[in-house]
Length: 152
Image 1 (tube, rainbow, N blue to C red):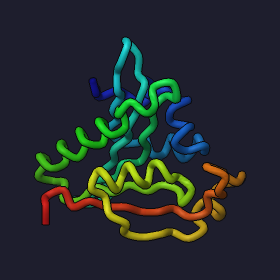
Image 2 (image 1 turned 135 degrees about the horizontal axis):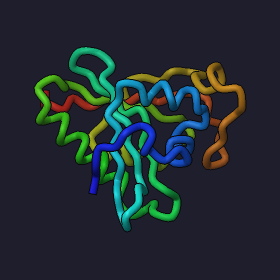
Image 3 (image 1 turned 120 degrees about the vertical axis):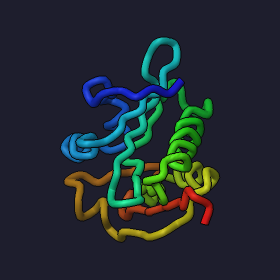
Image 4 (image 1 turned 135 degrees about the vertical axis):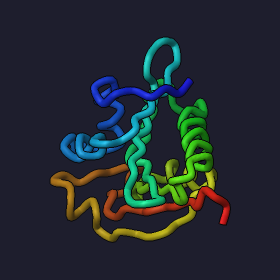
C-alpha cells in the first residue's frame, strides 16, 4: 500500500540508494510529495514527486529496499503516480532522470510509458565528488525520460 509520508518518515537509506549525495536528496525533498510503500508494517519503498514547473512534475527519487526488490513494488509505485498525474488537471507531463548505468531502471521506466527526452552528458562526473558505478559501468550521464500523461 502506498501512503503519503513526511520527509522525516522517509527512510534515509532508501533515499541514499537512489542518490548517494545527501545534500541533493534533502533539496529534492523540499516542497515535494513523498510516498512510502508500506508492507509488513514498514516502509520498504519510497518515491519523491516534485512540481518542476507549470504542468510538469518530476519523480526525483524512487527506491525499494534490497530485500523487497524484484516484487513489482517500483512498478506499482510508478503506476500509481502516473494514474494520479493523469487525474490531476495541473499535471500534463511526468519526468524522471536516471544514470546511463542504471539498466534495470531504464527498462522499468520505458515499460511504464516513459520515452527518452534528453541526455545530460557528464552530469554525474561534473556534479558528484566520487565516481558512481553500477553494473560494471561508470555512471557519467543522466538519461532523462518523460511521459505526457494526458495522452497527447
